[in-house]
Each structure stands twice: as structure tokens, then as C-alpha cells.
Image 1: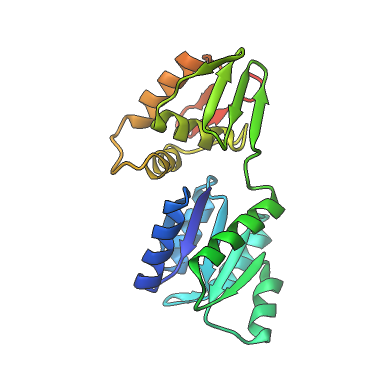
Image 2 (image 1 turned 60 degrees about the vertical axis):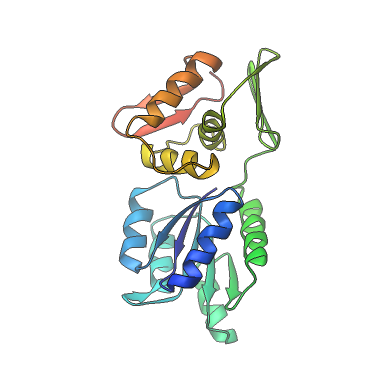
Length: 223
């Protein structure tokens, strides 16, 4: 999944990012409420957010209230040192989907993320059948008209991100981060996404991935 982490503690934030990326997630790490709000407003590819509550520039509870007020229903897991019942209730009433008190175990955090994602429908199905195309997300394999299509790690990472939500528009930056996190590579070249999409279209069919000029790309399940 493509996650947003709002956390100003450098050591904790880095540990969370490392653990989640090792589990195959793409993580956008923000340290200020204003940064997170700008990213959530402009980046639809974020699937789940992790919020520390008390940040140097404000309380993330108010950010959560604002996102819910404008109809943003993406799941949010609150991470905070506040362990009073009243604080937990306040976060949940603001729209949080779950609550984890610091210090926490990183494996428990991962399990909580997966549980919240399942409840919200953010997890991709184990397989996807789209006309002649079949994808197995667990095995990282693809078939076209019954014949297996051989894909590189980067091609699969891009395809899996697009196909996790057929019809959703994904920005180029979101796809770059997904590809380089899941495929275990470093920084992205400027034309990596375009090259990979061109290859996938040749292998899977020209209509499988649609371009919305200036905005991004989407996977067409019925193409």
C-alpha cells in the first residue's frame, strides 16, 4: 500500500519507515501537519495514513477532522504517547479508524495497518481477473489469454500498484515511489514510469493502462 506517516520523532519515524518498506509498503514521511495536509489534498494515491497527534505546528486531530469534513474516507491509524481514555475517544470521534499508544511493537503496527486496510477495503484481492488478463498478487504472476507473461520486478511493482485499484488515477510520483520501494531500487530516473508502462502495454495489451494527460495513469480492468 501507499502510506502517509505524520511523525516528527526522527528515530521513531525512521524505524517505522524502514519496517513498513521492508514489508513492501511505499511510505511518504511528513513531519509537520501542514505538509501532511497538502499531500493528502493533492495526492489521491495515499491509501492509509498514520498520524502522531502532537506535532510542532499543531494537533493532527484537527487535520483529521478537516479531512473527514471534506469527505476523505481513507483510513487513519493514530500513533500517540497520549494514553488517557479521553484522548483515545477524542481521536476516534475525530474519525480515526484505530489507535496505537507509544511505545509500540513494529510488528503490531504492521498487523494493525493490515487489519484496518482489510476493514476499509484498501487491500488488493488475492487475484484479479480482467477479461483475458489474470493477476495473482500473492505470487507476483500475470497471465494473458491463459499464457503466463514474464515480468521484471519493476514491471510487476508498477502493474500491482495500478491494478490494486482498477479505475483509480495514480500520479507519476506515486507510481515511482511504489516501483522503487517494492522492487528494491534507489532513486528513480526521470522516464522510468513511462518506459515501464510502454513495456506493460506491449506485454498485456495497449488498452490495459490508460493515460490521463498531465494527471497520471489508471488500470482499465475491462480493457
